[in-house]
Image 1 (cartoon, rainbow, N blue to C red):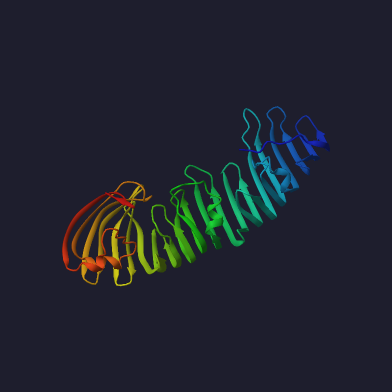
Image 2: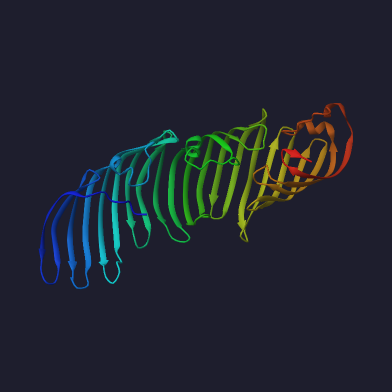
Length: 365
């Protein structure tokens, strides 16, 4: 909502009143410990409409409470506002306000989140259209630079037309998100060169993201994915992973594939390669589950086919059907294969497999 204005003090000005209008030559007052200037006209008096120009230069620290930041947050930097408001006041107020603002060297610091510093740029806000346009906005989050420009319309649904370039520290960015037990914990950097257009929450992405030494701890997965590096490219409703490399439980992995929006359902085709084997999966990315149409696991002496549904949070109920030919010695080659009751290297010979598993991914039953 609109910030609650404090008491305005030190009010002075000059106005001219006629039977037809009130002309405000100039009016000054102090609010947020800053000087505000106003000029304009109100006419006609019997059915008043206004056209006013409001200006101020202010220290951002003085508006911390007005914009809803608590005492544990520190806001600093300088700002400038200039607003033009036009429209009738009767029979009901219908104002069209165009606001132009500028921030310089702004920072938001709190023990609860990584510091957001060095914010500089300009913005325009259209009250009737509920749209904000960002111009040359640069900021550092966790010390990493990010530049954003474009527009955001706070409509139903919200409309985005933004471009972002720079770098994002994943640990710093996650500190600004609500806590969630099911969200992966990630560290490292991603390079961003993206255009974001369309309706929220599913805008179209165009451009690329570069992962730089990213580590991810996925809930329900015993070992973290480490040293993830590679590129994801976006074009219209399609994403392509270009040879992401990583390590899992000390083993090197390579991931490549595509995801696309077909008939409103996201589908994917991905291949995970590891020493002496590969897993290729085709499926659908649904709101709560990943539907596996077919996965082919290829090992030196084994061929297995998998299908089913996996919970997206890895802790919910999942089911998986497995069939094919398995040489047990091959299972020691699969990442995360953990055999507590026998050593697969001591048992040889092929097995015909036709199994169905149900339960949590980390606790099959």
